[in-house]
Amino acid sequence: MDKDKEKMRIAVLSFTRAGSEKNRALCRMLDEQGHRIFCWMPERFRSGEGSGVLTCESAKVALEELFSVVDALIFIGACGIAVRLIAPFLVSKLTDPAVLVMDEQGQFVIPLLSGHVGGANALATELAQWMNGTVVVTTATDVCGKPAVDVFANEHDLAILPQEKDLIKQLSSRVLADEPIGALVEPDCGFLIGEDVSLAPFEKTLHLLPRNLIVGIGCKRGMSETALETFVKEQLRTCGKSAYQIYAIASISLKQDEKGLLELARKLGTRFWTFPAEELEKQQGMFHDSDFVRDQVGVGNVCERAAMAAAKKAGFADEKMRFEEICRLAKVSDSGMTLAVVSI
View 1 (cartoon, rainbow, N blue to C red):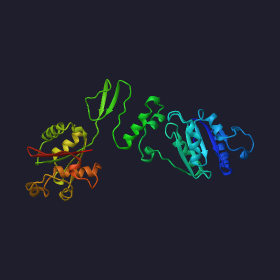
View 2: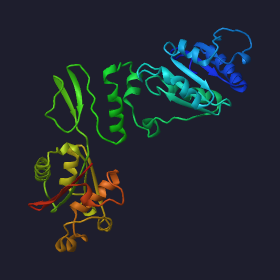
View 3: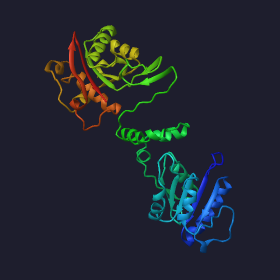
View 4: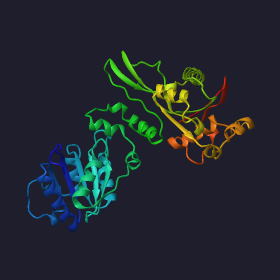
């Protein structure tokens, strides 16, 4: 346990002889770390009335005294015993103590209640390390490696209003589903992550646009950056997007030195990727191919196929996806330029 961490009030309860031996060892370790310890075990396993040893006749009576005043409860025994004992005392995920269960051999430590707000997950991890055991975390966000708003609040000393605690679950559900959530702070100057630049929650709002577009481009040799920029911006405007949302501009390898495309990518601060005709030909989907284009460059379509190839390279699409599944804007032509857009 980290001695620099805030000290806690921790109760440890056991029910068998082996569990009580583990109880004593755990309480000694926690006491050495500076935590306030309460220890309960059946009377027949008590060896003296040391500091922190409770003389209550039953675990239920001990919990009546402890549940509302300790930071954490550690049960050494079966999960079923712990569940039945704590059930009558549960009030709210914002106020209930952390509840952990470990087996009497110290092989597994399971955060059972208040994993985030109460810190059960973090405490279980530390205890498992101390005993060379395994922590068994079942909280969905932790298992999936996703951020949790109640963890963020804890880490930054932010309070959650009791009347809004149900929103924790809603926010976590959206995070787990890879859906967007918002975050704002109160000062008059701040930033907003999102596509809608008309939203200005602060007096001075910095808009951070997600780069979630791939733009495939085909063009005649020598096309100017100005013409390409005007074309791209006008087409993106029709679908409510900004050119600064472009993650990458994509084209065929024959265009890898095309000055206009290189200048456009530099001006927008984005990537410029090119792909050989053979790779473009392998892309899956319904494309607007042209025999004329095929005769010129070796593949029937550049902009759509390049956009799809780049989407896979960027991780926007997997190998099984088809172009039409992520297409934002299909092939558009103007004055020797063609454009296609895919998005996430």
